[in-house]
Image (cartoon, rainbow, N blue to C red; front, side):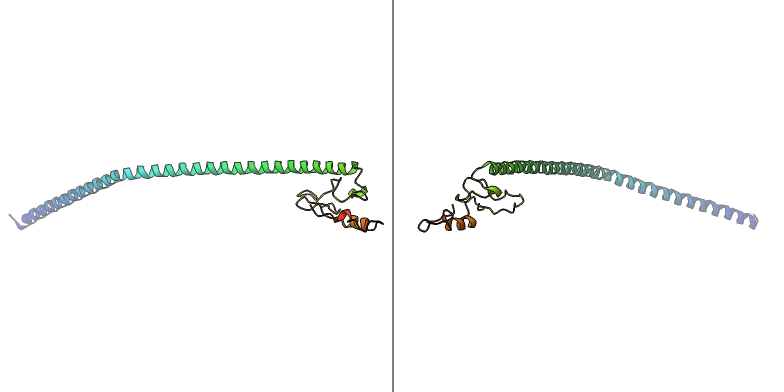
Length: 182
């Protein structure tokens, strides 16, 4: 056989060997890829339980957040209701206080023992017979002298003291204004 025939046979054999090597490498690579994909699928399958558990935890946390928000809304609504109730009670207390003060003023106007201006009549000790007293808690001061102590006792009236001391014939007798504070 001529040389060029052997060269062609050598080239064909080399191509067959190279093709066989390429096929074996592709097959080995495909087997490795199948094994890798199987390993990844198995790992993903194992993580499915973890994913479900974490989804459940997230759902529980979200439910707890909704419950906490609902409770906060309830507390806020309750606080608003209490504030409204407190405002209503304050308004009612103001109205009651104003009514009481009006009754006291009317009683002072009608009382024959109370002189004009709300002062006790001449010769009568301060605090007796009139309802002249300190303004109620939260009421505006009237500008008139008060005959009442904060604890409800009577206070001496300096004007009454002077008038009683100036009366003739009272030298041995204590003035009505000198009575001890009750």
